[in-house]
Structures are given as C-alpha cells and as structure tokens.
Length: 346
Image (cartoon, rainbow, N blue to C red; front, side):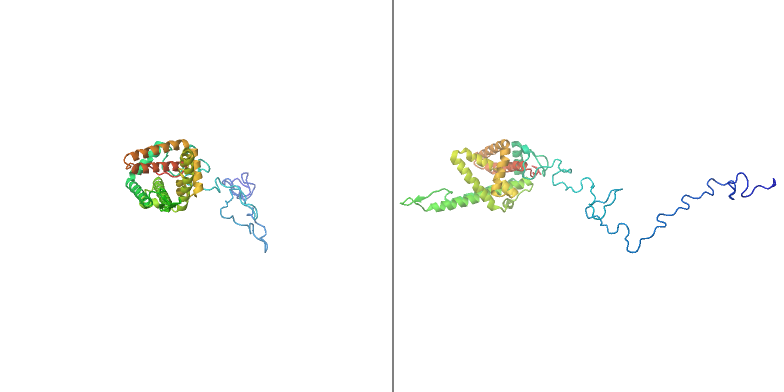
C-alpha cells in the first residue's frame, strides 16, 4: 500500500474488526437494536386444540352487589366464595331519620323509648327542654297563634256536653221507687244518660288531644282536624279502664285515685299518636310518667293552678288556660317519647 492511498474497508487500525464499516461513525453504529432476534410472547406456542376452551371460560361473573377484585388480587375461581375484602361500610344500612352518618354513633332510641331525664331526640326544630317554664311557654305561643280555633272548639265542646246532660238530668242517679222499693221512672234514663255522657265527653277529650298533637307536629289545626282519629274503640276502652281504676282509688282513700289519674295522664296521647291499644297505652303512660315523675308533678301542679285561675275568672279564663295547659302537657309528652316537636313560633 502506498502512502498516497488511504486504507479502505477492512483495513486500518481504527476500523472495527474489519467489518466493512466506514470510519468515524456515531456510537452504536452497527449495534443490533434491543430485542433483535427475540420472539414475541406466545411465539411457537400451539393454538388451543379443537374442543379446548380459552382461559377463564365458564367462570361466573360477579353477582349484583359483589365487589370487583382489588388491584393485584386474583379473581375467584368458579365455585369459590366471592371476594371477602369489602370497602369500609359495605353492606351497612344508611342512617335512619334523625341518626348521624356513622352507624351507632349517637343513634337515638326508638320512637316511644324515652331518654333518661327527658333529653330531646330527633325530629325537632331546635332543642326543646323538658321543664315547666318551657312547656307552658310553648303552650302559650301555640295557643296565641291559633287562638280563634282553640276558643271556638272549646266553646263547642262545652255546648255539646251541656246539651247531652240536659235530657238526662245531669247524669245523676235521680230516681224514685215504688212501694216495694224498686227504682222506677228516671232510673233507666239516668243509666242511659251516664253511658251517653261518658262516650261524648271521652270523644271530646280525645278531640282536644288530637288538636294538641297537631300543634306539636307543626300543623295548625282547623275545626275538622280535631276529629281526625279512627281508633275510637281503644279511646273508649282506655278511658273506661282509667275511670274504673280511679273510682276505686277515690273510694279507698282519695289519694290512690289521684295517683292513678296522674300515672295515666298520657294514655290518650299514646293511643292517638302511636296507635297503641288501650292496655299498652296505659302501661306506656305509667312507665314514662313514673320515670320522669319529678318534672311532671311540677308541670301537673302548674296546669291545675292555671285552670283554677281560669275558673275564678267567671269560667271564661278556661277558654284560654284549658288549651294552653293541654298543649303544654302534650309538648312534654313528645319530648319524653323522643318524638318530633315543631318550633313554638312559625
């Protein structure tokens, strides 16, 4: 080789092993690319024979409500139990009305189950308190906003009672006897008058309680709203049982009769508001009043004092004090049974 002829392909100290690559090429020139000579996945594998099924064939899809597998978990095989790892709260029931979002956290008792000490439960608009002042103030505010209806229904009740008493001589056992000492004349009339008077007075009392429940619900009652109850039979049976028990108590020593009337104070509320039968309503009233006797004794005495004051004012005051004390006592009932209580003013 002469000095004037430069080395050609395959010659020279800078040539890479004489592979016929021109000199002064960039790094990696002539190097095979990554994966050169490698086969793709599955290359050379035989396809499934006729009659064979592809992987996963015949597996059942997850049922409605089952969770899909988490990332990296293997799906269950056919016949195996579904996924056992569920997200937090899976399968738990949503909170009921008045409960907090977390189950069992601050969940109030069921409707009709009193809180210890008469604490307030769900369903209200604020935080009603069980006290004499709060109850009477509530009764006054509700009466004031619907005074015309309450005065009118009270007058209607008084007039109906008087009209029923008049033909029967005031329900009394006013009768004469014959020569042999047997009652004659007005005896039968007095018995009929006693039964009719009991039924009418009981239904009037139930109508007033129904109206008070409407007020506490936040539904300002009209005249027809007072008679919106259907369980008349239970109302009459409950009142009859209370009348018999209290009469026996008054005959014994007066005080037992007063105790019976006090402990059965909320019987009609339980019958009309929670549709309980007569015996269950009496038991419910006995339980809730005996558990909160202190506050309710004070409330009862305050209601009696107000009604006495109303009677002193030529009985006209009863048109005001009667509805106020009824609404106040029904307010206390709703607080004790964890029921809804509308705001005093709307």
